[in-house]
Image (cartoon, rainbow, N blue to C red; front, side, top):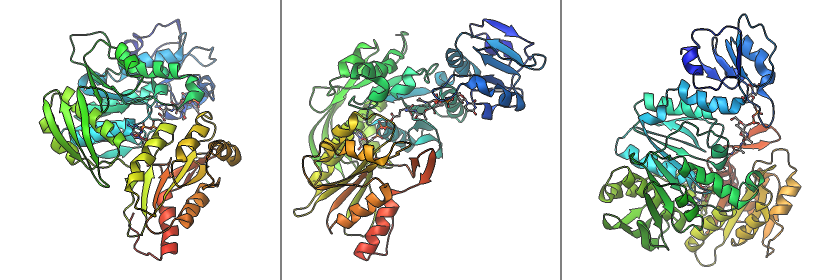
Length: 496
Ligand SMILES: CC(=O)N[C@H]1[C@@H](OP(=O)(O)OP(=O)(O)OC[C@H]2O[C@@H](n3ccc(=O)[nH]c3=O)[C@H](O)[C@@H]2O)O[C@H](CO)[C@@H](O)[C@@H]1O[C@H](C)C(=O)N[C@@H](C)C(=O)N[C@H](CCC(=O)O)C(=O)O
Ligand SMILES: Nc1ncnc2c1ncn2[C@@H]1O[C@H](COP(=O)(O)OP(=O)(O)OP(=O)(O)O)[C@@H](O)[C@H]1O
C-alpha cells in the first residue's frame, strides 16, 4: 500500500527519516512483521511494544510507529511519532484493510452469556440457506467451514480487520462477531460497522476488569452506540426485553429495535414452552404472525438464544416462516450443554458455564431430565487470576445440583487452594468435594456417579486444554470421564 495514503488517517506529530513509497504490511507484534512492513509499538498490560523495535527491524520493518523515542538508523527505517499508538492502530487497521465491514452485513452479539451460542446459531442457519457467512468468537474464526484459532473472543483491532477482509474477499455476505466488553472498551472494534447489534443479557462476570456492573453495562452499551448516527441506513438493535439492563442498551441507539423475551411483551415472544430431553417447542409471536417453533436445542436459555437468532434473520430480511425450518435443523453448539454420545448408563453434558447465571441456567435445564432416584452431579471450576468476587456466587448456584465437585478451570499462577476454597465458601449442604487437580476431579465425579445419573462438566466447553502457570496442557473432560466410566461400568464402546 502507498505509505502516504496509509498514514493520511493519522494525526502525526513528526516523522524522522525517509518514508518508503510503499509498505507491504502492518503489524503490532514484532514476531509478525513482514519485510517492508510497518510495526506499531503498543504499550500492553504485560510488556511495552517499544522494546521490540530491534526484532521488528531484523524482520525488515521499514516504518515504526511510536509514541516514545526510538534510536535507530533512520537511513533505512522511518519513525513516525504519534501521541498514542493504540489510537493510531485503530485508525490504521481499517484503512489498511480498506474498511472491509462495509462490504458485508455485520452482526455483533454482546452480553455476559450466550454470545457464542447466538453467533453460531445464526451462522448455522445462514449456512443452511447456502449463504456464505463467517463467524468469530470464543471458539475461533470460522470461514467457509474452516475454523481458525484466535487468541481472544474479540481479537485485537488489526486481526479483527484482517478477518473481516478475509471473509469479504472470500465472498461472504454476512459475518457474525462475538463482541466482548473488553473488546469494546479497548477499541478492538474500531472501524467495524455493524448493521445488526444483539444484546443477550448482563449478569455478574469480569468485575475484576470493569469493577462495577454500571461500568460493565456501559461497556456493552458501546456496541449499540457504535451502530452510529447515519439513520438513513437499515440497521437494527435486537434486545432481550426480559433482562433488567435492556433499557440501558435501548438508550444507546436511535435505530429501530426488535425486542425478544419470554416474560415481557416483545417483538419476538416465546410462550407455551415445552421442554423435552432432546428438543424444545414453543409458540412464537413474531411481527409477521404466530408460529410453532420446534428446535433441537434444550433449555430456557436456548429459547432466548433462538429468539435472538430468529430476530436477527428477520431484521436481515427473511420472513419468520422461512426461518422456522432453519431453526428446526440447527446443530448443537460445541461445548454448550453438549451431550456426549455414549452407551454408558450415564448422561454426560459438556458445558461452558463459568458465570453464576450460566451455572444456574445449565442446572435448571438439566434437573427436570433426571429420573426419580437419580442424581445430578455438577463439576465446576473457575479461572485463576480473574474475577474472584463471582466465585462464592458460582458456588451458591452450583449447590442446586445434588453433588458438586469444585475444581479449577485454567488456574494460571493461582494456587488451587484459594480457587476452590472461595468457590465452596457458601455451600449450604455437604454433598460436595474440593479437588484442585481437574483430571482427578473428573475421575472423582465418575466414581461418585451411579447408573442413571446425569453429570455436567462445566467451564471448559469446547476447550481441549488447561492453562497451568503459563503452559497450555492438553485436557478433555469428556475423554477422562469416558475412560474412567468405561472402567467403572465395564463399557468398552466409547464413542464421544
Ligand atoms: C488484559 C488484556 O486484555 N490483554 C490483552 C492484551 O495483552 P497485553 O496488553 O498483555 O499485551 P502484551 O503482551 O503486553 O503486548 C504488548 C504489545 O507488545 C507486542 N509484542 C509482545 C511481545 C513480543 O515479542 N513482541 C511484540 O511486539 C504485542 O504484540 C503487543 O502489541 O493484548 C493481547 C493481544 O491483543 C490480548 O491477547 C490480551 O488478551 C489476554 C490474552 C486476555 O486474557 N484478555 C481477556 C481479559 C479478554 O480480553 N477477554 C475478553 C472477554 C472474553 C469473555 O467474554 O469471556 C476477550 O475478548 O477475549
Ligand atoms: N442466553 C443465555 N443465558 C444464560 N446462560 C446461557 C445462555 N446461553 C448459554 N448459556 C450458558 O452459558 C454458557 C456459555 O455460553 P456461550 O458460550 O454461548 O456464552 P458466551 O457469552 O459466548 O460466553 P464467553 O463470553 O465466556 O465466551 C453455556 O455453556 C451455557 O451454560
